[in-house]
Image (tube, rainbow, N blue to C red):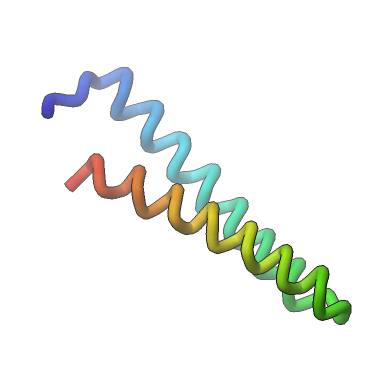
Length: 60
């Protein structure tokens, strides 16, 4: 599969955004004491980590 320079640029931008979102969810998870909320935040962070990994796989 060949990726155009425009697609590559979009993937790189999305990787940066996903990475930032994962970091913010980890911070929020560490600051939250409510167990149910902590679990939801963790789940959301894991979803974005999967998005990041999937996008990264397009570059390999």
